[in-house]
Amino acid sequence: MSSTLNADTVINSLQAGDSRAIEELYAHYREDFFRWASYRFEGTRQDFEDAWQDSIIAFYQQVNQGKLVHLRYEVRTWLYSVGYKRLLNNNRKMKRMLWKDQIDDALLTIELEKEDNEPEKVQALHRAMKSMSSQCRELLVARYYQNQGIEEIQQGWNLKNANTTSATLARCLGRLKEFIKKTFSIFSNG
Image: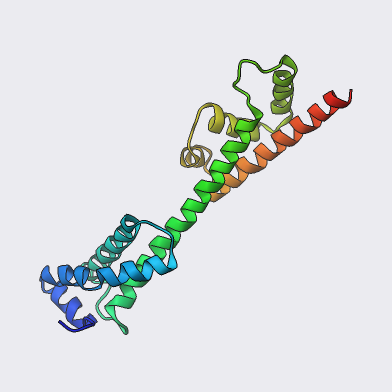
């Protein structure tokens, strides 16, 4: 077997219904892709495997649907590009998840659910929630009391995407925390 697979040969084989071509393609560049990906991304072998499989499936579908009939470059380049995009999206998603976790942790520091909360703290929270816009109040309730996920909130509120939803929640949470800080600084000074 040659070190590279000819793109036109692979495409022609797939168009002719030769399933061995996709199997050969999958196996031929797989380990190289894993090495390449591990230098560029933090992730597990399973993450790399998923990205590689997505690349192979996308290639097969593009050829099968007649959208990909010729490549000006190596098949490997096309596959790595698709895998790169998948890993990049995963990486961004993980950063959003970590950011969301930080927001969740920040809200937990307010300790709203503890039974030993002092009545003035509970009243301050109620005042803070009432002072917020109805959208912020409802978003925070949906997220932190009803335990709705970002995607669920995004769909329910018809927000643009998960980033917009997370950013809106973060702003609302920041306003709530700021109001509570001001309220308690008044209590501690008065």
